Image (cartoon, rainbow, N blue to C red):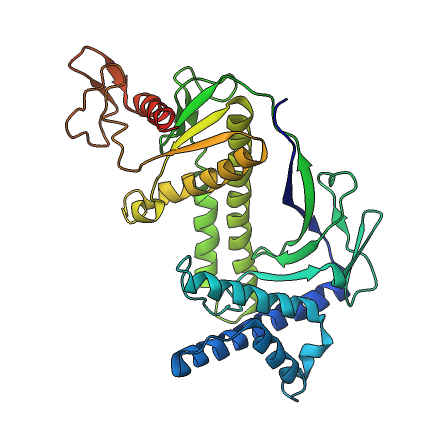
Length: 379
């Protein structure tokens, strides 16, 4: 082993099954969180637009106290105050990022489309012997412990959420000491694609084929018929009816299945890449621009390259590995990895090509090899 262990904040997410009373309390809390966020955003927008003034968190917090004293919003005092204050903190952070030009202007939360969640800090939950109680609740949450928390874990924040498929989740944030992995001499270049999800500069046993390619599982494609059937059923239902609500839930469950399987696959892939290589080299892809191609947008979204990069970023930081990013304009596919000569235009349908030096290249394998070389050269 080399280096010192890193202390990181890590969230462990579990599914739980609330009692009817807990579900009702959490649903009210979600609604109050959304209302407070939207009212605070409205007040900040009015002050910024009409007066050119920035509203502080303290002003928003004082306004929340006044809202609770009005007859129309007195119900805000019936739920835990901590998730409401956290909503104001999140809004304040959103404006700070906007003014620093790191993010867009904050938007209102929709009852139907926004994520239903509430964040509890230490003063609003109790953690005893692996059991979790939230404020305003008498019974602990019935959590399915799919994996253990780190030994001696002391949660600092608990976030409860409900997804569109009606599933309840609790995310527990803890500080964890992660020791670095043993040093290895292996490095790998990664070329993202569609026919093959990624192509590596060297094969890895049990992960790639003999050419170094990881097959694209195409999770959305595999469930496309099921999804289309559920969406057709939803389209036939009358708006506002109970049957439409049930049909919407069926569509959400298909989407959840696709998302869960994709996330699981990407976690396993990124973990193997980080564990077995000292450095991982990738391209700086602009996915937002690439999905404008209507012919490839669905396939690119299904591949979820951005999520893979995000996983590689934090896992390499955790385990003492190195993530190198090559410029998006680097001609990885057209550059001969044998002699360094740059070929002419190369449409996407050209999968194999021959250089003037006599070398025959698989387009993706050649790109992965060039990405690795470029990343190591800029190290």
